[in-house]
Image (cartoon, rainbow, N blue to C red; front, side, top):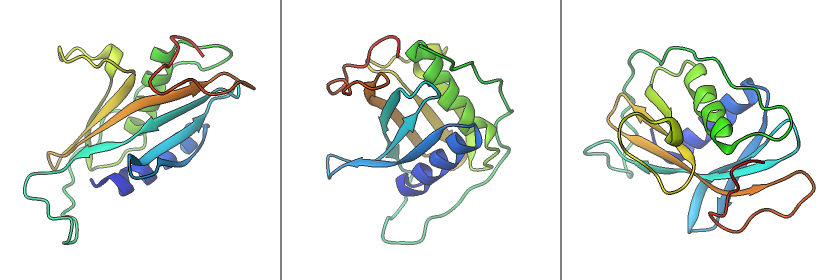
Length: 157
């Protein structure tokens, strides 16, 4: 799945899970991302970077590959101040719960059992096509406060 379609898919998934979300970009540096508003009013901005499926030519129409969508998961509670790990799990779960047949697996970075680690919080998505999306949290803002500096996301918001 290409980044613009995944961004739209993520915005839809977050909305279906009860969160306000809108496309976000940081110019050419991060052309794709999403700004998410949590129930408390806290904000998370995450970038979207996609590793394309092998042989993908962006000048040609995208080859969509479908399979079995991930099993639905229970979403963590996001009431009040919450650990950023819960936000990772919620957003990853919201994407999994959308039932998109292009998505094969979704995982929160901090809860990943794959042995891979990320310096920054966020989540990843694997597609049946072999493409992957990386959703790294870039900024966070507590309700009524200025957002954090780039990649200075607190442990709790």
